[in-house]
Image 1: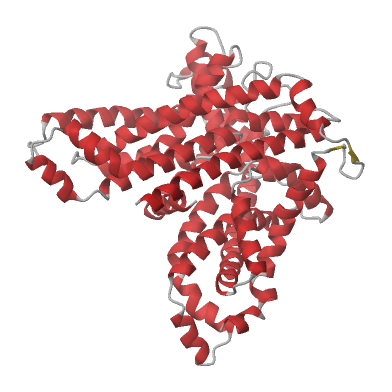
Image 2: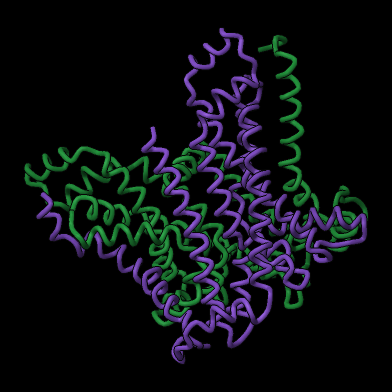
Length: 281
Length: 278
């Protein structure tokens, strides 16, 4: 059977592969090469070694600042999102009326696109700050917390859905046995529920971390990096390096390579942790 | 349930109610503000429009005129639907091929696809938009090629994961009966992929419909999708007609919310499967 399928490469594999080559493989390899070149229009590229990588950090401190801003943002939002999502999941797996309606509502913001989300929250946050005669563009702290709130609003429902599914998969006999033994709710939570949903916690932690690191649309629409690049996250900094400064395309590409290594390492770490757990069980 | 609700559950219920209001509030505020004059949106964003501040549908008519919202909706719909259909068709065929045919080449393809899933868009955005320009893919038809290529990783990965789990005997039986690989795929394999296909369709619809950067960089000057059209409301020096903005945000959210309420079950199942496998 394998032999007869093999002959159909052109029909089955080629259409997707051609698209994959055009949209990913060639741009990726070319981008990697260009990160070692100076160019404005890819046809005029000259090899400059590692100078783009050095310039990424030395030409201004925006990239380094964006890294620490993104890191702080990711840490704070990962913690808040997962705590709130887990708490909601616990609440909505008890028999209270309207759980389905609540789930529907809490998940809804997740479907709204980043640009729309960013503008929605800009109105709300500027509306609140207007009482103090300020706007979100005044202070980087407003932008930071604005992004955290936005990220929570968008992601809590998603993570909640994952946690709910995990909690519902816990065998009821286990919880009933604990009840018979007179275990309190906190004991059940610590000894049964949390260990049982640990795989989902890992998934959610990594999902929120990569979402946080890759954030772009929301950042652009909510603060656009204001004031003075202070709320610029990594993805936005890379975009601005490419497209708002002529002659910095090589630096932008070098930053993109660094960004890729960073994001890919998080994903590989995730793969490693989940695989390890599978072997242990 | 009635009257027998425990006290702790009663408190929980109320807490959830408060939280639900908080979740819905931003959407409601945007909706209310879409009927207010633009000056009142910044000076009194949380008041109900009345008297001076109420402008009826002015924001909507101005927003529609300035963004070309209906054509943006058309482009978004066309690009999303056709890309998703072609992703499903092309990647299911590819996944079947690389799963059933063992060899170094198919192994390399598989790992390249998996690798593409962890690469952020920023890595390829500059070169991809240049290539799209060179190959004349910078139009609403050509961008489909880019979406298929960039979405191929996750879709093939999920399809191939499922194909590995289905018994090969069914396909062998069909082929012993004289069916060609083409008939076998389309009449035996493809029907079995239905639930995975729904998941992939949902995940890709959400991605492509909301995607901003790729359409902005490739076709943004001539053909604006909804996210691009909305971002273009921001003028050159950061000035924004907030009235028109509010109205367009409302229009942008309506199709998403309708889609969600209609396909809610599939959507939640889809993102769950996507989270666990992706």
